[in-house]
Amino acid sequence: MFREMRRKRQELSHEECIAVLDRGTSGVLALEGDDGYPYAVPISYLYENGKIYFHCAKSGHKLDAIRRNCHASFCVIDQDQVVPQKYTSYFRSVIVFGSIKILEDEQEKRASVEKLAIKYAPEDTQAGRQAAIDREWDLLCMLEMDIEHMTGKQAIELARQV
Image 1 (cartoon, rainbow, N blue to C red):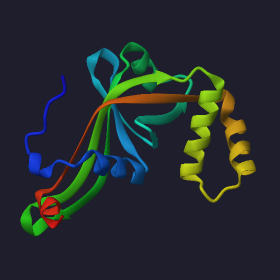
Image 2 (cartoon, rainbow, N blue to C red):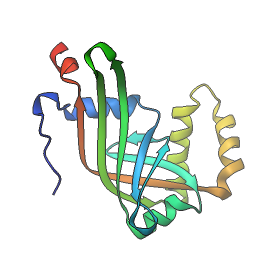
Image 3 (cartoon, rainbow, N blue to C red):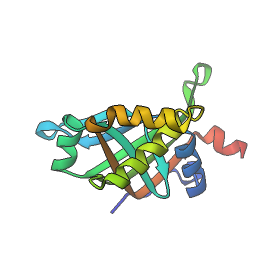
């Protein structure tokens, strides 16, 4: 169902892909948008145990697209060093494919947003995080992407360094 990578020597291992997802702070979520147009949106996220969590408002283009078609891809760029003298870049990135669901269960929703808050505000106190979450709770929607396929690739120059 999913394509194999052509340049196998540049392929990241499963463990390297997870490390990229763990390090990253943002990526691009791609969905089927209005009138069949692709809709790709930069977004912060949390990776945990084969799933990716996102937050959003309770209405908007993203949710409309997910309700219409839950299949999505998500890309995280770990490195993009332009090397002008060689007309190339030394890149490393991961793309995941999967299905997204809206978390309806209040406990699941709260648990995932708390972990997201810890990732992005690790120095804040638990009370501070709870206050921020409570302030936005009524407007908050949490999404869970179940990863069905994942690939990672890096520039051949980076692959040779290993």
